[in-house]
Each structure stands twice: as C-alpha cells, then as structure tokens.
Length: 303
Ligand SMILES: *Cc1c(COP(=O)(O)O)cnc(C)c1O
Image (cartoon, rainbow, N blue to C red):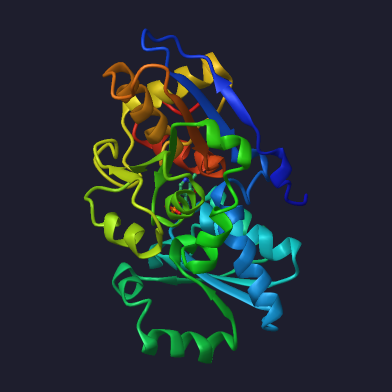
C-alpha cells in the first residue's frame, strides 16, 4: 500500500447553526491507513533526506500507542529501511503481542528497545545517543513525535490553493510541527487555530520556533485533563459524530479538536458565515489499543 496524498479531499460537515458557519474536514487520514494524516507529511522529507545521506536505518521514540511509532515502522517497511523504536516504559517489553500498535510495528520489522520513563527523559543527551550508536550502529534519527524542520516543510504541503477561501484552519497540536506547517502555508488573512492535546501552553514556544507568521492561536481548554486522557463525554461525542457524519475521529487528537470546534461554534466564537477547514490528521490506528484500556476501565468504547 503506497501513500496517496491525492486522496486527501475536503469533505463538508453539514452542521446546522444560526450563524451560517460552514465546516469542512480535510481527510488527510485517506493518505494511508497507518502512515496517515500528518505522520505522512512529517516523514516525507525526513525519509528523502535519510536516503540521500545513505542511511539504511531509522531510529525514533514513542509511547505504547504512538501513531508516530506505527507510521515509522510501516513507512520503513515500504521504503526498505530498518527501523528501531525506543519505547517509553520498560514494563512493556513482554506486552508487545497484547498491544495492537506495538504488535503492528513489530510485524513491520521494527526492532524495539524498552526504556524506563526516567531514562526516556534523558533521550536527547549526547551520552544517551552515543550508547544507542554503540548498540545499533549508524542511524537517521527522527525525534519523538517526528517534529523537526523537515517535518514542518512536509506539513507546509497540506493546504492547497483552493483552501485559500477558508477563514479558519483548525488542527490538533501534539508537538506543534503540523500547526507550524499550516501557519507557514496559510494566507496572512486566514486564522490558524491549534487545539492543544496536552495540558499547559508551553507548546506556544515550540510553535514560535517554526512558524513564520503570527496569524495563529493555541487553544488550551480542550485537552480533557491532559495528553491521552479520555472521558465519557469525549467518547460520546466521537461516537455521535461518526454516527451522524460517517467520519471516524481518534480520542487523543482529532476528537478533542472537533469537540472544541463544535463548542466554539455553539458559543458564536466564529463570525457569521465563517468558513472553517478542520484538518483530519489521522491517528485512527490507535483506537484499537485505546479501546482495550477503556474496556478495562469499564468505560464505553469508540465505535
Ligand atoms: C501526532 C498527531 C498529532 C500531533 O501533531 P504534531 O505535529 O506533533 O503537533 C495530531 N493528530 C494526530 C492524529 C497525530 O497522530
């Protein structure tokens, strides 16, 4: 299965509202079942660079349900790279088969190294990287979440010329790479709204590092308690949204963004007749694993 960026289309979400606000969703999740949405965009130029520089191994970092880990494993397999995943949580080493994301990555040929949450914090230290070089030989390193200059460059290709008619561009924010790319390819007259999937507003600093314009806002009240925190209200929203519009959302990123957009529309945040484009950044591979956790907690699952 190859990547199909041409499959990413703007689909109307026919919401009724007295303000006449129009909402569309850009189906970046249609690019590939796993290397989907922004993960394809963020890997594209990194992989070209790795090939150019003669690397045959990609090494990256992530948690047990990480869309980024699944994407690197799958892209590596398609494009003939060895892949190494440094996984947060040393308790996971014997749980690969019961974790759908790790099991998939392993099937793609990814080799894992499980490390404690404490060592994971030190992953950017030179000594840590040197130890990895001794263990695995030479590799092209892709940072956690995949964000770097080349990732932002890939995300600058998400908006097309026809998207210039939108007043607002909305996307979920994890590390800020995707929203930075969107800001850079937006028109100054457009507003880019980032919906933070994490608690706190430290992400602003990261966006400022990469963004070339100031036509953006980071919205920080739709994280539902923090990264990967999920409650019944969010699950109910995601299931109702899928039922009504036939569009699946994930609970960590796109579900929280869309919840936020609906909330803002109901509060008349957007001026009359605004045209909004929400980016579907993918992430659907994570649902299976998250549903196992929800079941264990006796919470409703994502349909
Ligand atoms: C990784 C991810 C994000 C976050 O992207 P950043 O560039 O890290 O901000 C958003 N949505 C989905 C579905 C993701 O997998």
